[in-house]
Amino acid sequence: MSSTGLRIGRRALLSSRGARSFASSTAGGGFSYPGARSLEQIVKLELLEGEQPPKIRSVWEDFHAGKDDAVATALGASEFQALVGRAAAAPFFVFPVYRHEGFFNMLCQFQQSCFLVTSLEAFKENPGAAPPCVAVSLYDDLLARKELALVRADVINMLDKKEAQLLLQQLLASYQDDTLYEHVHKFNNQPEQFDFEAYRALLKDATTP
Image (cartoon, rainbow, N blue to C red; front, side):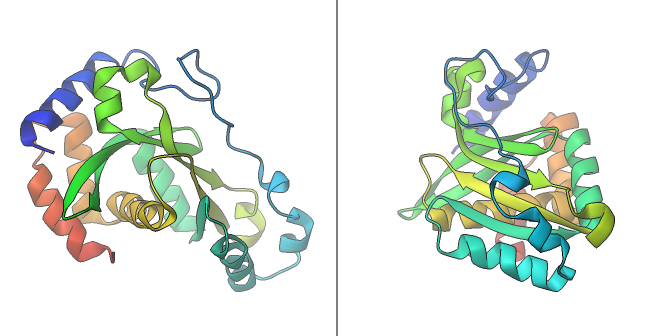
């Protein structure tokens, strides 16, 4: 993706800030997809409540290991709270997905307890109807008692599981790492100062393909 393409994407982003920028299960956009399910619809919550945090993390990640359409991880209470706070302050960002010696870009938008990720190209064509490719749900059901939040990325289309796993790592790192988050903040609040290539170089050092 060229810097010109990113500038076009940012202009589309800024022009649509007054409305929901791409559709969700509750928006009136041109598509529908299954909304983020409650944690109780995925696992037996009462069984997790009887375990300690390390065991809960292990059970959660093992449960998703064999699934082709979802990846998962867990965050400590302070990590989760920092992530949500930063995402609320800077809800949009772009992530490269590498494929066949090149890459294309995905755009994420944070909405309450979920990150929706779509193709930047689809967003540029029609911000209000860009379909999500990945939905990253944040579950805080165990936060008060176990100081642990569960994270699940549902792979909807366009990406395979390995690509979605790396994208989730990139997303979390970009909002948790102070240096990477500077780029996220600039993208949202000082777009003229955002340097995608500088961010991409830092990201390669911070995440493992």
